[in-house]
Amino acid sequence: MNKEIISLYTRFIMTNIKNSFHWADINADKIIRERKKMFDSGKDAFVCASGITPSGTVHIGNFREIISVELVVRALRDKGEKVRFIYSWDDYDVFRKVPANMPDRENLEKFLRFPITMVPDPWGKEESYARANEAELESLLPAVGVFPDYIYQAAKYRKSEYAQGIKTALEKKDQIKKILDEHRTSPLDNEWMPVSVFCNKCSRDTTRVEGWDREWSISYSCSSCGNSEKVDLRETACAKLPWRIDWPMRWKHERVDFEPAGKDHHSEGGSFDTAERISKDIFDHEPPVTFQYDFLSIKGRGGKISSSSGEVISLRDVLEVYQPEIVRYMFAGTRPNTEFAISFDLDVIKIYEDYDKCERIYFGVEPVNEKKADKEKRIFELSQVNELPDEISYQIPFRHLCNLLQIQSGDIEAVIASLPDISEKQKEKLRVRSKCAWNWIRDFAPEDFRFELNTHGGTAGHAGDIPEDFDRDSSVRVLNLVAEEVRQLEKHTETTLAEAIYAAAGECSMEPKDLFRLIYTVLIGKEKGPRLAGFIMAAGKEKILPILEKY
RNA sequence: GGGCCGCUAGCUCAGCUGGUAGAGCAACGCCCUUUUAAGGCGUGGGUCAAUGGUUCGAAUCCAUUGCGGCUCACCA
Image (cartoon, rainbow, N blue to C red; front, side):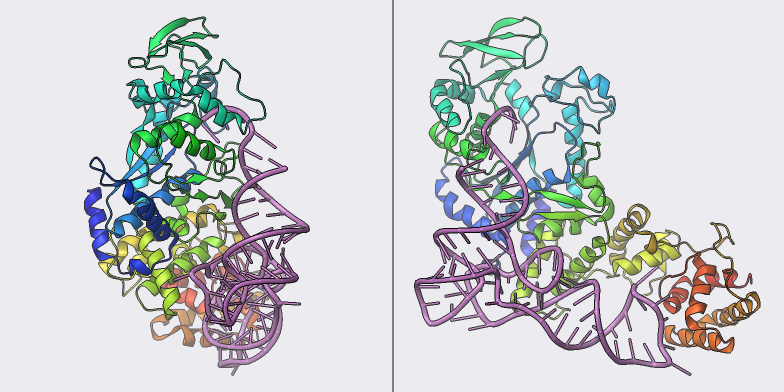
């Protein structure tokens, strides 16, 4: 399934890839240039790696990691290269603290220092805490067109698949210590061992490795339960490498050619830096091509991706407001090493408009110069979830869609039915966009933006009442005049209706400005609203007339 | 202290395979007797942080400086 989609995708790309200066293509070129010469009889595909620890809810910042890799993977495949795209769950990580957003925190406390695969799922659905966090993300990734091969490190460690890697680290521990010490404030002590152990009795990592027989056997003791024993690396499930050694060991193990990392890793003395040296000097593997990606911020809903108050912004939250291809668009259209904000405020409208413009450029209906067109087309291609569309979307500006939805009280099918020229194929995407727009109005739109047709009479507050500073008789008279026009709505265009409204105001010696305030108050209980004539046309006689006729 | 990133219009930023600067918002103006902009059209506005270098040509490449920000030096 996944592979079929990818091949379709490859066949239809429009951009001249050779002339693309999109960052994903540039990185793909670099990978080919530096890595292809390392292929041998056992290897004919590039290995692109991504990975994080599921020690809490996977947030949208973590998503930048995987989508960055996925975009480069696509770029490589578009150039006709074979790629193995792996996503490595570091689920043999230690459970260090209970995140603020978790349920059943007291129970979770009991499992601190356990491997996260042995902590129970607080929602009680999955086999473990780690699995619950993994499953949540894995269930969402297909929606944004991301299909990696998942690697579960806990399973690999516990099957001793990395035993040789651990042994190598032990054999070269002095060399490793020297590399790590170069950037430490205080050096590792002389008894330090490049292995950590989860106690076989109590499952905690509160252990100390005390001996190694220079072969496969290590001994440890646990300060929590007092257990002390000797284990064979080829059989035990309890040993793992510390992060800074684990990472390069896996590069070697999976023969990784490309892996980006966050800016926290990409600093001199940071973990990528030491991993590069350990990869080369200890594991004899040329470190992968990489780049650094910057952090994301959140706008329009709290300040942080993962706040101490417990709120975590995840891919699921972003998909509530953004269509999947627009989620991809935000990442594909931004260079990885620049910081940007995922917005939930009014910027949402602009992002949608930008995407629509990008799509119009792709379909050649928006005039731009060639250079810009090439760039935008490539971004559009990379933004698509699976195969490239052969027809432009039914483009409704997000803002207008919000108005239509509110007129129809959120009835998406009614909105779609009101669009005369939409094709069957276009409807599905518009449904998704409508859902996002409705979610946005409900959860994030500013008050100015929201309205509700006063269909049930003066229910909500004083909505529907004639404002007190208006003369009642002339108000009723002018509303009746407008109602008369609405009664004959089919003979009007937006322009003629607007004219008729002005005429009505003139006839009753009312300032147009006041008339608008009156009508908006009556219709939606607010002093302002969407441009009136168009608004009435869109809402239709059936909705507007009963309201006006009450006066 | 080391490393990385940024400094472009009033604001937010794009442009960075070198070819003489651009978008949104804001401002200003115009538009249908005519909107309130949550319309349409248009206008103005920049020594591209500074200095030096490479080049026929630099916002773009290199070097130095200044100012901001992030990050590492615990753990992952």
